[in-house]
Every structure is written in structure tokens, then in C-alpha cells.
Length: 278
Image (tube, rainbow, N blue to C red; front, side):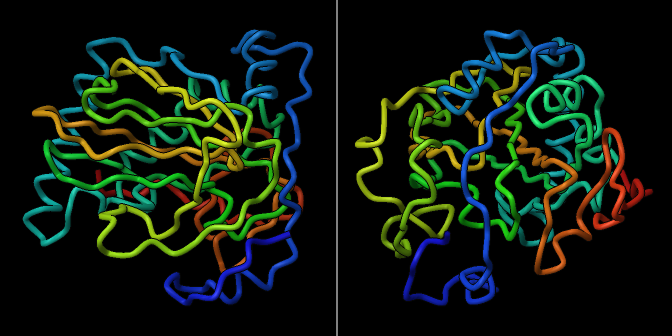
């Protein structure tokens, strides 16, 4: 099941649309979680997300924020922007360390199972008054993965609240399947290039308010987005992407993968090493 579109804005969109993908929500089945609670797992299955999970204390997140500040300065100096730092674990050892951090991986294992691959890392940094929104979308629309056993951990580098445009979820929308989207146009100032119209019809909009050092975790089928940051404060989050090792990736996305728990018996995922550059 794939969304039907008539545009060619996304590299590889034709190939993605031709893929036969299992885009159904597969609930977490875990009666003995090690990190999360049974209540959190039930919430993830019911509403498609959990939030407010503390991973890093103040000293650690302050150090991580300092690292990002330096990385952002280098990126801007090289002509990039605050959204340019993508697949960062393939380039920067410090990001690789965050992606493979046991405290985060243990949370993901409770939802996806013992064999887990980490494959994505992207800083979404909204500068003060940058004017860019993230339209309602489903992550699965962008990913050549099947079956849909994938989740995003959103690590708050800065405090994220309504004032500085925290992420928002449509609770329970992961149960409605893969939705048809339309291309965004330049006048919308959308960070991404897809929009799902009238998202609120699929559930209640919930603000993903996080303190720096906390994470939320959401299903790849959950509708989510965020408004433009009109405040005087920055809002940076690091998205870390995971899937069950049984998931197959097309378009060479398996080359991004790192085995962070258990094994990958078929050797599908590249299990790339830590980069030397921090």
C-alpha cells in the first residue's frame, strides 16, 4: 500500500511508489519490558507515541548542546542551513555515539524487539523566527522500508514547548494506515515537501513538550508536524531512526544501518562502523 501522487519532487519517488510495502501498524508485544513501563507500551500501541522519557541529565545534555552548537557553526560556515545535518551518524562519531547509546536503544528494544537496527540521524533545528513549519506528514511516506516496524526517537537538544514550536502528534492516527499526501509548494515554507490535509480528522492534536535531555518516541505511521518558530528561542531536536532488523530497505538504505541490539542474521544491513571524525 502506497500513497498515490502525481509529482516527481522527491528523488527516487518513482521507485518508492512502485515498492510493495507492508504499511500497517505492528503493535509492540512485550509483557516484560526492561526500560519502559507496561503503561508506556500500551500508550505507544494505542496513541502511537510516548513522550517525556528522561535520557540525559543536565550536565550531559549541556555538553551535547555545546557539541551541536559547534557542528551547526561549521555547517553554516560551509553554506548549509540549520536543517542540513542529516545521516549525521555516518559522518560524525559523536552522533554515532548518541544513536547507539544504550539508554536510548533499551527504550527502542522494548517497542521493536531484541534485534534492532539504527539507520537515521537528522538534526531539526528551528532558529528563532526562521518562518519554516513542518507540515503534517507520516515518516513512512519517505522511507523505502517494509514492513512498517520502525520508530523515531526525538531527542530534545533545547527545551521544546508551544512557544518555540514543539512537535505535535495526532494521537491514534497510526491506526488509519498510510495516507495520501500532496506536494508542498514554496509559498508554504515547509521544511519537508509533503503535506497531509485535514490531519485533525484522524485524532486529537497533542503538543510534544519536552525538556532538554528528554525524548519522545513515535511510530513511523503517526501523523506529526510543527508550526513555525516565531519565538526568540531556538528549538533543536535530534531525530534518531530505528527499525526491527527483519525490515528490508530498498534504494541502498541498508547501507545506513548500524546493528544496535541483537543480530541481523541475513546480513541485509551494512552495520557501518563508527566514523573517526567527531
